[in-house]
Length: 375
Image (cartoon, rainbow, N blue to C red; front, top):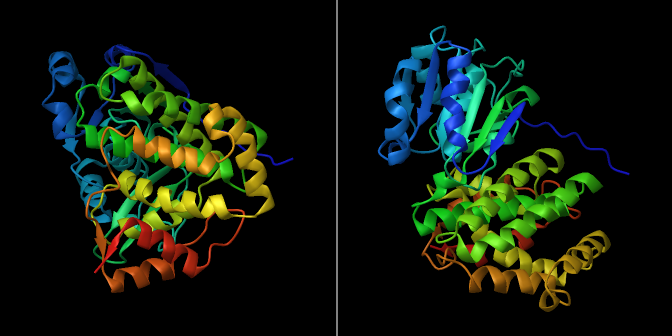
C-alpha cells in the first residue's frame, strides 16, 4: 500500500463571508503585516468594505500583476526584509505564489534563483514568515500547497518552485463570494486547472488510497460546478472545494505529463497556465482512451463507476465531451501558437512526472500539436 503525507493549513475557514474572519485574526495578534494582492481585488467592493480597518493593520502592500519573477521577489525582499513579520495574500494563484515566495525568501540570505528547483544550487531551510492565503480564483490550490511557483523568463527560461512543507500557509480563508463577477475566461481557465490537478493526482503512481479518494471527491465537485461557474453560488462553492482538494492531492501524489509539458510552455509563452493545461488535457484524454497500461485502465474503470451512466463505458471520451459541451468559455479554440524552436525546447525539457508510463517524445509532441498551432 502506498504511503502519502498530507500537510494542510493550521486553520482553514470556508464559506460565503468567511473573509470577514481576516480582520479579527490580524487584530488578535498585532504585528507588521504586508499585503500582496492584485488590482482587480483592490478596486472591488469587498476590499472597499475592508479597507478602512485593514489599512491600519498593514505595514504596506505590493501589487502582483503576473507570475512573479526571481528579480521581482528579490526586490520585494530588499524592500521589506526585517520590516514585515507576517504576510496576507488576497488574489489568484500568482498572487498567492508570490506572497509565499516572498515570505520564505525574506528568511533566507541568498537570491531567489539560488533556491529554485531545477536551476538552484542551495536548499531552502523551511524558514518562512507566516502567511494567510485568501484565493479569489479557484484553480491552483496554492492556498494549501507546499510550493511557490516562480517564472524565470530572463536567465534560465524556466518555471520552477520553491518547495518546503513549512511553506503551506498557516491560515487559508476560502470565501466563494470572492469568485463572483470574475470573467468567464478566468473562471474556466482556473477551474480546468483544478480539474487537471485532481485528475493527474488521481492517476499518479505516487497516489495513495486516501489521496485518490480525495481526488475523486474533488472531481465530483468539479463536474457539479463546471456548467454553472458564472451563475450559481453553489457552483462557486463546489469549484472552490475542488480547487482546495486539488492542492492537497497534488501535494500528496504529484502531477503527470500534462503539467510536465505545461510548466515548460509557461516558461516560454505568457499564456494562462490553466488554459494551457486544459488544452493539453483534451489530447491527453485521447491518448489515455487508447492506453493499455494496466494500472491506468484499472484507475479509469474505478473512476467510471463514479460517473453518470453515459460515462461508464468510455470515461475518457465522456470527460472530454462534458468539458467541451458545458464550458462557459471555449478555452480550446483560442489561437495559441508555439514556434519550432519552442517545440524543441519543450520536448527536451518536459517529462512524464508521476505517470504510470514514460510518455515518449512522439507522444508528447502529439499532445502539444493537439493543443497549439505550430508556426
